[in-house]
Each structure stands twice: as structure tokens, then as C-alpha cells.
Image 1 (cartoon, rainbow, N blue to C red):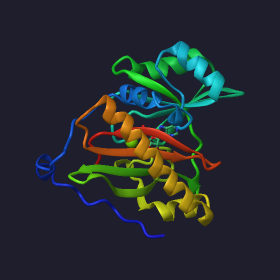
Image 2 (spheres, rainbow, N blue to C red; image 1 turned 180 degrees about the vertical axis):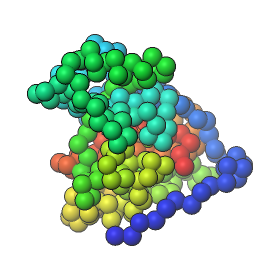
Image 3 (tube, helix red, strand yellow; image 1 turned 60 degrees about the vertical axis):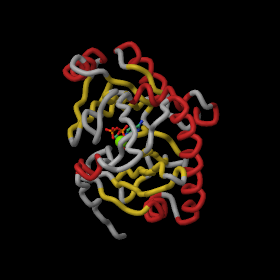
Length: 238
Ligand SMILES: Nc1ncnc2c1ncn2[C@@H]1O[C@H](COP(=O)(O)OP(=O)(O)O)[C@@H](O)[C@H]1O
Ligand SMILES: [Mg+2]
């Protein structure tokens, strides 16, 4: 498999690109915009605002959740929390801590959740490449001719991490390579087409709520069963 790194973009150049559009920071607001379209609902992991009571309910229902900052980028502050027969686990970066009680878990999370606002999202068991989770980035850009795809790539998490972000050491592959290596060659065509069609529908919803957006970066997960999930939409994607 060929890995390639993204070239660094000159920030001064980016400022002068047409249709740069606005930056919409809140993952919560963008998720709400997508949920208004019935055909997207089943592709969005259940998402709630963080509170200890909501965490307890989400863990009871889903077993594994991701707690992430409402305003965040680059996989920073994204925590995996799971419940099992012995108690709870809290995974941040390479480190997994175990808690016997829910209070212990909430105390550990409180160090972060007191300082910033967080949301809780159902955790998706991503398909993997050699045990490393992979997800996908679709870059969609508005030009004078309308919306155009600029990239459809896979990102494989650095060994030992569950976040795939390149700035956390993830590796970039083509989407075809990633789908083939994680799910099998027979999935490539269908999953690429499905990510593209979700992108078109989701963009229509976002444009309706936020006229003026011009660059979108969709983060798609594909779980072990081959189901596509929208993790987030970036309005100023790298
Ligand atoms: N619900 C989820 N289930 C499993 N993994 C997730 C989930 N949400 C996020 N992740 C992982 O964390 C990474 C970062 O989360 P994301 O929502 O894209 O925020 P950021 O703005 O930090 O990139 C994702 O690319 C994915 O690898
Ligand atoms: Mg992301």
C-alpha cells in the first residue's frame, strides 16, 4: 500500500482563494442542520450535549461513546469512553484508564468538561487496516461551475490511537486503497458512490442553513458492517 502525506498549505494563499466561505465551528449546530434531512438521520451517530446524566444514558444504550469538544479540530480532546462488566474505560491518546465506578469516570472527564463544552456521540467500531481504524475525508468545493469533489481519501489511525487525524500521526491512502484493505475490493465502488451521494445531500442541507459556505470537508466512518457514518463536517477543511 502506498502512503502519502498531505502537502502543507501556505496559509497566506488560502486567504485569497475565492469562495473561501465562513468557518462554522460548532459541531453541534452543523449536526443539527444535517439531522433536518430524514435520509441523513440513519448516517449520523446519535449525538447529545455532554452531561454526566446523558453520558450514563448513552453508555447504557451504546456501550461505547466518543466525547469530543463542540469546538475542536485535529482530533484534539477526543476521548473514547466504554462500559463493560468490570466498570468503565477512558481512552485519551495512547492511554487507557480504568474506573470501577461511574463517579470515578466522571471525575476524570471533569478535568476537561469543566473547561470546554463537549458532546457525546455513539462510538462507531470502524473497519480497520492491520488493526488500525480507518475513516475517510471527502473534500467538496464550490467553484464558479458549482460544487466539485477535490479529494476522497482514507486516513488510517497511527498504531495505538483510535483517532485517524493526520496531525495525530494518521496515514493517508486513496479511498479505494483504504476500502479495499479494510472491507474488501468488492466494496470500493459502492462505498465511494454512497459517500459522494451523502455529500451532495448534506451539502444541500448545510447551504440552506449557512448560505455562503464554499469549502467542506466531510469525515466519514465506515463500520465493520460496511455502514457509512458522518462524524463531522469541516467548513474550512485542510
Ligand atoms: N463517533 C465516533 N466513533 C468512533 N470514532 C470517532 C467518532 N467520532 C470521531 N471519531 C474519531 O475521532 C476523529 C476526530 O473526530 P472528529 O469528529 O472528526 O473531530 P475533529 O474536529 O477533532 O477532527 C475522527 O476522524 C475519528 O477517527
Ligand atoms: Mg475531523
